Structure formats: structure tokens, C-alpha cells
Image (cartoon, rainbow, N blue to C red; front, top):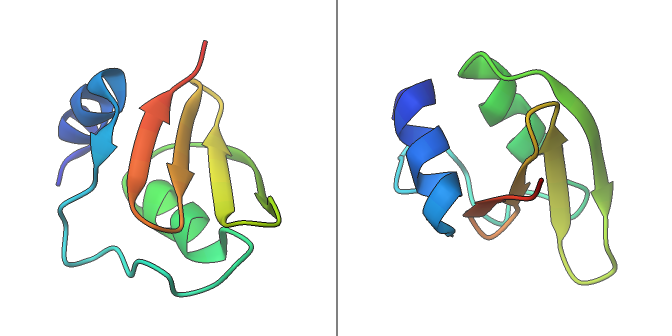
Length: 73
């Protein structure tokens, strides 16, 4: 997926469908961070929520360790 495709998916709140993203690889969002940064996003934080991991970009995208991505403004 390209950065623009990821942004569109995040705007509608859907799952990432990209073989380059390893769902459930960790619990603290490290893989989500790696994936987003590889696509050109700036990630400000990744962490364990207690239920899953999340990586958050400067533009408000939240990518979960299960592959769900959404934009929170």
C-alpha cells in the first residue's frame, strides 16, 4: 500500500491489507510504527494499551497491532 492509500483507509476506519504489515507481531505497536515509518509517516508514539498495541502518527492516524487503522482528529 502507498501512503495515500493508507490515508484513505484510515479516513474510513478499515483494516490494512498489505503483506508488508505483520499483524499481531508484538503488543506495544513496534511493528505498526515500523510499517508506518516505512511508508513515510512520522510516528509520535507507540504503546501497549493493555488489549493491543497502537502506533500514532503526527497526522492523527492510529494503527493497531491487529491491522485496524483509523484517523482521530
